[in-house]
Image 1 (cartoon, one colour):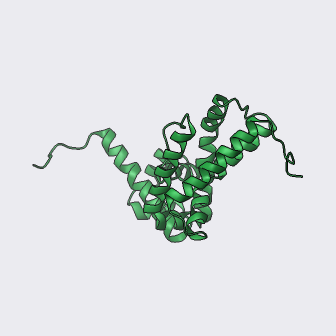
Image 2 (image 1 turned 90 degrees about the horizontal axis):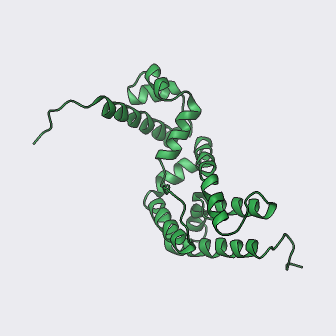
Length: 196
């Protein structure tokens, strides 16, 4: 049975946004960059309509960064939950490896990755607070930066391409590293402590 009902205005707006973001993602994969004019040509949507939904190129990039990735709604509360999430995310990246690799190797893709990482900062900072680590201290700030970096898509690309690891094996190593770093931070280790 075919639905003959016209699309609601809200559904039409969402479909328009989807076409715009699909065009941006495709241009980044193919060319490593994009202009609003190219997005308009590829999506069949006028530049004026694109600007109605997204204020500028950076807004488009930020929207694609959020859409073209696998992000949790909230940060896990335990390391076991965190490892489960990491396995899930890296399995998704493994399934979408060509797209992730193509996007991550472009300037726009690196910008997208930076946007995603900045978006996660407040949530990870809150998670550190629950573990008794103040992210505003030098040690807490280091932990925050490492927690963003160790399990990142860039790290997964390295685990896969350099070491030949699958998502499960790579996430086990990343979880071990983050757990060790959290414990060291909780115990008050500073740079140089115990390494002499």
